[in-house]
Length: 407
Image (cartoon, rainbow, N blue to C red; front, side, top):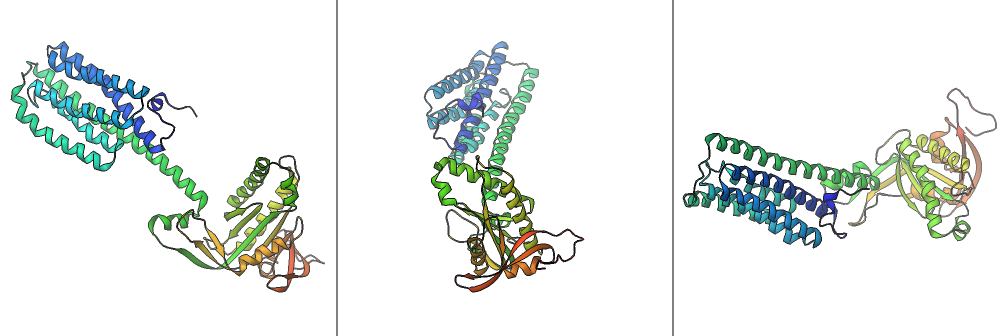
């Protein structure tokens, strides 16, 4: 991505996104105000107020010199302090030089940009100090205005500069705030997207508003585990980068299916992929949606090569109550707990290549809408003998019971 030229002035590789944004805003403001100040100076000199015109001209020259030094020696805090000082003091000096608020067309309004700019490019406490400094200068300019030599400017010129000062100060303030808020919103959107890629939106909203352990019971859910067959020999035959690239291709296909069926991806562990339906958004068709996804997963893997290799998966499913939530305080992960989760994992690990193996609980939920083949019983660790089925396909809506298959 091409970096704007203005963002390269004073840039440091160690800068975070917020600091880089602050630098860009400050440099942009300084360059814009330097051009405006040069025009102001020329205008005052043209009408005979040479000493008053010299002040904005000096601001323009000093600002450009300071920015050039900042580009060469990126000491941000020093650059920021110098510029905020110039923004605060020079309009004040110009007010006194021109003989007060009216004769200067309220040019001290430019000083208000100092605390406003500090809000965007500094911390709140320091910005408050700059604002207090402005409040001290404001009455002092009234007390000292008699020491100036009022310029004999035409009334029309005074009015003209009133309009310019008010319009330009408000325009610069609005532009700075608009740009900053727009960038902040974009950064916030990126942060939200990253968070939503990790956590379900419902859990994300709870985390942003509350500080507590999140754990909820879901009485009806379906869980799927998918695992690459013969993964260990495959891993030995590939470099780590090639292996990660292969898994990335596979899991990206699975991620698209998760989005298609509006399910919730829980995590990947090595070559294992875990998905849940009915959590954290309860749905009556949780088993059906997950079975459809399992069939498409199998078809997706069977129809194509990944990094020039053919893969096969074991897929296991189970349905039942689970507890879902987040525990701990760092590196959050939305996870599931319960016997139903353990049994889904057992279905995968005890399964066969290219098979979608399900338990009695899942079979009872989908048997009228999917073609399932009984596979007898298997000995499941911790649960003993269990009857299992393989999901073969989804039944057409008008298809009745198929002879020879369990329904």
